[in-house]
Amino acid sequence: MRKRKNIEEKFFKSLSGLTTYSLIGILLFIIAVVFYKGFNALSFEMIFKPPEGGYYYGGEGGVLNAIAGSVYIAFGATLIAVFIGIPAALFINIYLNRMKKVQNLFRYLLDALWGIPSIVYGAFGFTLMLFMGLNASLLAGIITVSILITPIVVRTFDDVLCNIPKGLIEASFALGSTKTETAFKILIKQGFSGFITALLLSFGRGIGDAASVLFTAGYTDLIPRNLDEPAATLPLAIFFQLSSPIPVVRERAYAAATVLTIIILSISLVARYISGRNTFSNIK
Amino acid sequence: MYQEVCDNIENLVVEPKVKREEPTTVLKISNLNVNLPNHPILKNINLEVQENKITVLLGPSGCGKTTLLKSINRLTSLTPELKVTGKILIEGEDVLNGRTNIPELRQKMGLLSQRPFPLPFSIYKNIAYGLKLKGVRDKNLIEYNVEKRLREVGLWNEVKDRLNTPASSLSIGQQQRLCLARGLAVKPKIILADEPTSALDPTSSKTIECLLKELKKHYTIILVTHVLRQAVRLADHVVFMYYGEIIEQGEPQELFKHPKTEKLRNYLIDGN
Ligand SMILES: Nc1ncnc2c1ncn2[C@@H]1O[C@H](COP(=O)(O)OP(=O)(O)O)[C@@H](O)[C@H]1O
Ligand SMILES: [Mg+2]
Image 1 (cartoon, rainbow over the protein chains, first blue to last red):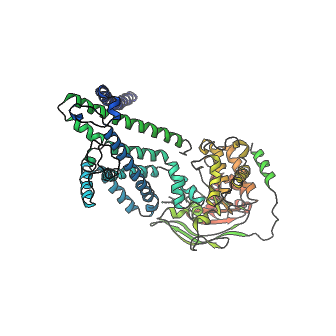
Image 2: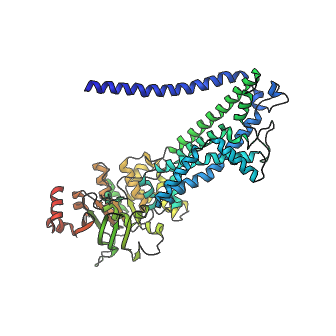
Image 3: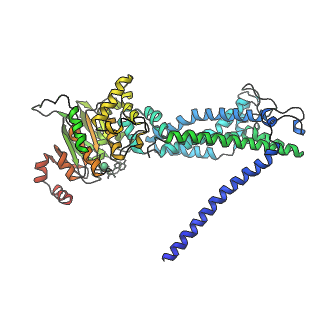
């Protein structure tokens, strides 16, 4: 009996270890491949110059247009998503507490929104754009991506709020805080690391998504200077260059992918640092 | 150590209260009923709480002691399923039915829960928080109050050099005293203490007990406990609850020596 349990124990330990290590291994492998293929083409010019004439046939220039466009769109959309999503999460969590059914319905709907493929958002954004009389532009891209990522912000932060100890909430009310004070002074502070996670997830999804910006942000070799100008994005830059028959251009696709990966990795490092500093005073 | 705390507090008592002949009722509960949709939690509770006394709520767990406390400061409204009816008067103000400003009402009471829940701030800010809610902006006044409250709970000497460290870095006993100090900062009338020592080690428990004894000079205390000895040590008035009802109440000596009901007698026998 004892022996069987030991074997069982060992078996599951190795199995779970195996899955974990292979996951990490695959991740590292992906990064290694992208970096390896990308670093050859990666140059100062690639990062700091927009495409020049004949760039897509191997000519001079870089992908600064796409880097700028992607960063603008992801930042803009994340900003909007936070301003809509955080109050929404607080509302669902605190104010809808008296109506469990509505609360659950909302959560279900938001989960469903999270699961909708981004091309659907792209199509929706396209319709919205036409309806509002917008052209493919930075603004249309930001709006579409913010619709895509707001559910992520809401649900992630909502989950964080659910894990805050009930006793802390009671303590806050007992001291005479209103609901608003409890939400914005206590819960946001206690849930700060979750807030950062929500931000990170949505930013990552926003900067990496191609389908939602395909029709809405458009593509251009220029760096957008206004909200109503079209904007290039890194995922699309990768897509266009990767489908080129010219090997040099395909290599540049990997360089663009490397840039995208580095942006995401550095954003998450910064976010982790910030959230680490802020969770220090949290109560468990 | 707890002797030291007691001495500290003794020094703080500036003006000993003049003994009044008639006890003043601070809190009056009449016909309080708390129900869940399918079963009652509190049944027809009638209770008067006297000023500057420790009223102990005693009873087996699940009998509704916490619910009674939460009805008094209306934390019950966080649980929408609970239906609370009856009358609770605090200094003549109707807690349940009147058009009361609930945050203001809650500041008349300081809550000490079973486990300390410090706010996710520094030690200093934990105490300053309630003052800021009250609209106090004067830095000096806040600083003065932080020190005063920390001294009141005998924590000042232990934390005066690290007021800006997170409250969560304190030991659990210190956290509980911090939570007490935090509650005192808003100048409550009543302290609601819900088994405040049940998560603490014996030394910290003694410190809290001693504090409560001292604090009753300035505050009215309702203490929930299921530790019989604690009740004997601290109570001025004992309320014995059983399955949502008050079975017996009275002076501790009388009640513990000559329990009138079978239920209390059994409870006392099991407790000893
Ligand atoms: N929010 C709630 N939902 C369901 N049952 C509850 C809730 N609050 C209290 N109760 C029930 O009410 C009874 C009294 O609980 P409580 O006041 O915590 O007792 P005590 O503090 O004396 O141990 C228990 O049977 C408990 O299950
Ligand atoms: Mg209880």
